[in-house]
Length: 116
Image (cartoon, rainbow, N blue to C red; front, side, top):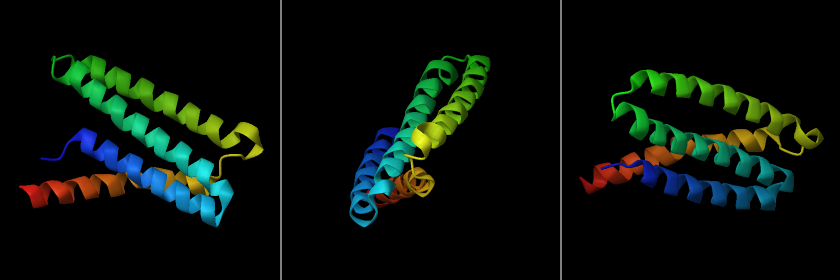
């Protein structure tokens, strides 16, 4: 069975691998990849905690409100990351780091299907 922890572990592995490759190809990409993968990893972790805290306990309104607060916070943090240090976070690297999430989810689903 696929798990959130499995997705996060694969996300970490993909983030480290792509950041290492980015460091070799173009060093400015590496920080963007780390920041992008970190953002989506934190997002997955927060969604898992929201699900445990609100959905399983039956407090769906709390989950909905916290999801919107999380979205606003991540939009603000993304804007800060892109404008911080006059472009020290490479936008392409950030996009590559964010793309690690769907790849990690597919990898975990593929692993779970093969195990089941």
